[in-house]
Image (cartoon, rainbow, N blue to C red):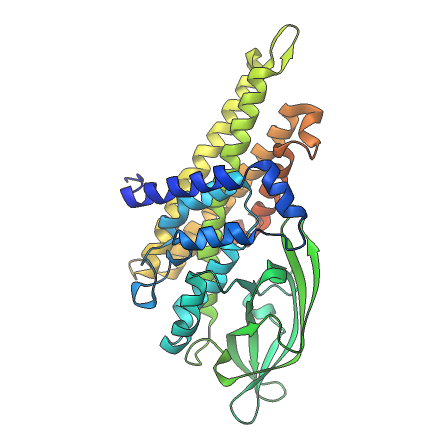
Length: 384
């Protein structure tokens, strides 16, 4: 199978890399991370002006008509630069749910604002660390007289919630005690009355929050879609986001490998570069093999996500390949991250060196949307 990028994809990736080289060096990133906002409004505007936020949306909605495969190279660049802006959170799963579940009127209201960068989104889904299943959703949306909704519940670890303009919230539809009419996705103004956040910084320097919804009053059109159960759309959006997360991890792995190789070439011991020691060369080769395996499976996963969206394969096949990617990429994140730190020695643990931040990002990416154990189980369940 030919995994070469198209000319348009290469040009887009080159533009992203030039932007990041110009505006997102390691020192610039440290300043952004320590700022009160936790992201750069200037970088966000630049990403929007390049058209990156339009890539996965349909042309009829003002997008580029692209898919996950078109975002692989930009996500790799973001992974290498350790981007903290809410790009992935806005496009997936939140933006993906708007694109696949929203009615024409909802898409017309939301997609142009996403594309021009005026609406940053976050996905509020996880409620407990143990419950990843859609059956674990306890947040409820109760219909009220007049066609509105009353939203109540709590969500944990909502990445980029502090900077989001709107939240895509998963909730169980409730219509009286004990009645369950499926799961829905609601677009909620992040600053709406009844919405409160306990904000914090994650170990890899992203901003996140635990979000509480205290009987939040919503309009009747706050629920995405035409009223059908949203489980399939949520699972597809999470797979889309997981595939993009794998691409970001590949970029971070490449960055870690490059930094480690450079260190082995320059750090001297016993009068010679430590890279001349055969044992360390073998470890570097293993890191490179992990990187190439992660790259290949990520491209396959993104291609399968796009194929499923076109109706060429079923959801079970998409889930199987995405879980396979998460297993291999998660394993590569752990191996490369730990080896990079060990080969750097004590220097690798210092906050002054980028490799320590890359290690933390790889650790978090390996956990996002399910860890290796979770996806091993899911892969087995999806096997034909």
